[in-house]
Image 1 (cartoon, rainbow, N blue to C red):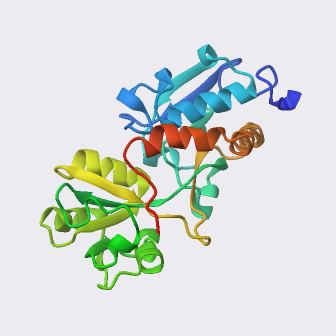
Image 2 (cartoon, rainbow, N blue to C red; image 1 turned 180 degrees about the vertical axis):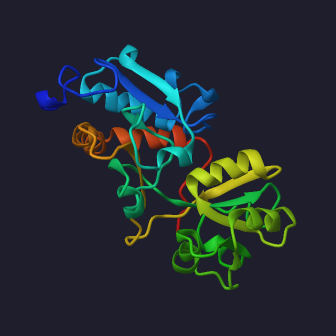
Length: 255
């Protein structure tokens, strides 16, 4: 079914009439955006954006991209974009000052290591049981180690991801658990010969999601949510995840 007429381009109160202005990071990294060119529609978040735009009735040519920093937009005040997509986790704290669409991606935790490590070739969660794993203190990543992997060795706990990366580089730990967006970044940019061993299967109590960020009380929030929900229901989101995330070298680990 087509979105209700109130969600059509002619009636949407966008920053620029008849155009959907979308912001993302600078630079934007794969697999979220390929070659730092969101306008190509390549990469998971770029592809999701064009799918949402299409559901709302916009052609690809009616989508305009701008760049923003991550922290600067999670603040109160007017926005120079209609939607912003750059791996924003939906949190109650952030919702006090900005709006979010419904989640377009259920955030998973992933294991990062280096080529040649004891766990680099692991394909199952049980293969990680005896590994020395680490995570940052107070994170969902740490609780995922304890609840999903349940390793025989007590996990190493670090003050932040930077300290954990240093430990991994020094081979004090075999692997590091972080959310998947961070995993892609660390494996590509921070760790020599970095590899993503795989994604941990989601546990029932894990409801962390990434969503489009909009200005507080944006007139577009309900329509964008409707579009995202429709893409989830018709299988588009799952297909785009398979295309861009699984193929980028982050398979889901078996039990």
